[in-house]
Each structure stands twice: as structure tokens, then as C-alpha cells.
Image 1 (spheres, helix red, strand yellow):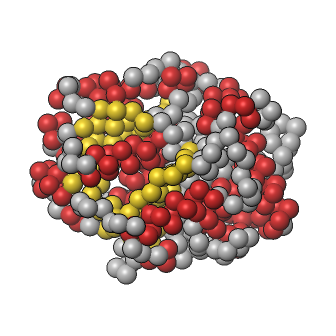
Image 2 (tube, one colour):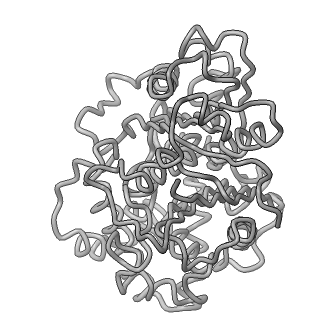
Length: 414
């Protein structure tokens, strides 16, 4: 794979609070903040950090289902709401289910590479708490093939990944798999407690592992092979970051060490109408990460941290195997042995990931980039981990649907 022909940087990232169950200020009876307020908050925060709207050439916004959750389409036209200085500037929206945020980043990267822009404001947003969970699950089912929806579970995607978990249990053992999935939940909550914008930041529960292990599977009320603790959150929020060229970096007056450099990326899709060949393998994830690492010219052992798409705990474990951190069936041992903890061999999801920080679907891919920008530039606050000099790289993996739309990006400390 060829490396990018221009240097590409990301900087000045911002996350709103990931709002939903778990936050003390969340009250569904009082209604949700409007979609546009999240767009405005995240966008204005980045503009303030980079010196204003006049510095921006283009905008791109990732969103999955505003047309159904919020009865709102034509999201590019909200950029001038962020700042009047964005009026008459080009902007687009992109959608790829839960990978919509990652697609916003890829679109911004391609604009920089095409030399149509030197500074792109990339933003992701979703407001989902306008609907009750079971109705929201039906909307989110559009990330899968609508024909399969007819025979799917009422909680469609929990059902899809429950089937993956059941296949994994059968192949590699249920008890140890459940222990690893419970540990994944514990790691997510412990990391989220260190990030004030996380949905689970205020989780004060103790004995998290005992709680996760003792929660019984209840197929009559939920799905066969997962509990609610295995699932990512129903979340409202937005994330934004500036994607810039080397010339754009100079225009903004930033030094490379204040940014992260994009040195490899891949965006892939697989056939939405076809079931996975093997329910225990994330094949598209595996191929996308391989391509991104090849473009970057590094291997997995050189990474200092990873943000991966744990829409469900089993997805996190299978992603570990797909990207080569562990052999098939050994991802559970990798987690149980503490290797994914913030002080472990490969720190993963240092602000809680989708299970701990939250999953405002269209924003998740951008949130991952913001988290890695913070970590690699030492701006992560209480959530900061040590980034070793010999491992100055990071990886993000943003998945849409059941391993159907994938965005993977490799970053380097500036």
C-alpha cells in the first residue's frame, strides 16, 4: 500500500457529554436536547481552538438516523448554524450506520489528499433518546439488511451479536467467554470513570465483576447469549475534530506535536445481504486493519493504544482476534489476563469505549479520533495513559452494522 502523498493531521478535538441512562442530568421525561444543539456545541469548540470559521475550507458531518430519530435530514445545512462564517462553504453528510463518524473522517482525509481543502471540520452526531429502547432498536436495525429484519429479534442488533456470542461459546467455551465479557465491562466502566464526558463517568458501583458475572442471561426478556451489561449505550452526543494538511497546520499556527498525523487508513465494505461465513470471525475488520497497518508501514506490536468498536463485549473480543493481538479463541485469555487494561500490554478504549463512554452512533468514529488525539498529545486528563517513545502509534476501528462497513485509521504522535 502506498502511504498518503500529503501529510495529514488531526487536532483540536472536542466531545460533548455522551448523554443517556447513567448520567445524573439525564431525564427522558423532560425530553432530549435538540440535535442542532449538539452540532453547534462540538463545532464551535473546535472553531474556537483553531481560530475561527474563516480558517475552515470544508465541512463533513457523519450521522446515521437523524431522519428517523429526529425527523431531520439535510444536515450539511447546519454548518452555518455553528458559525455564520461557514455560510456558503461546501459541506456534505455521510452515512454508514455506526461507522458514519469514521466515514466523516475518511471523507475529510480524502478532501485533503485531493487538495480541495487544507482544513476540514469533521463532525459526528446522533440523538437517539427520542425513542424508547425497543423502538430505537427497530430504527437501528436499518444498519442490517431489511429482509433479514423480518425474521430478526425485536432487539435486532443485540440479537445479531447474541448469535455471534452463542457460536463463540460453542466453539471456545461458555464459562471462560462469559468471564472475559464480564471483565470487558469492568474495564469499560473503570476507564469511563476517568473521563468526565463519558456516559458512565458517574458509575459508583463496586464489585463490578461480581455484578456482571451474577447477572443471568434472560432470553425471555432480552436475548439468548448477552445481558444488558454486554451492550453499548443508547446515547446522545457529538464529537468534532479538524483534519488538516501540512499547509493547513501552518495556517492555523499549530506545531506538529500539537496534532496527530494520519499515516494509514482503510475503508471497506462487505455484502449486507450475506450472513457471515463464520460467526466467530470479524472478517471485514481483519482486512481493513491489515490494509491500514500496511499503509502505515507498522505492525500491531508498535501500537501504543487502540480505540475499537465494542458495540457489544463479544465484538470487542472478536476484534482483538481479528486484528492479530490474539489467535482465534484466545481473545478471551488476552482480556482475562489484563492485557487490554489501561496499564496492560495494549491499552484499549481508555475512556470506556462504546460500553463505557457511550455510543451516539454517528459520532463514535470521530470520538475515537478525539480520544487518540488527546492520548497522543498528553491532553487526556485523568484518563491519560503513558505513551512510550518506541510505541508512538495508535489505531481506531469503527464498524457499521454486523461487520459490513469498516473504517480503520492509524495515527502517529506528532
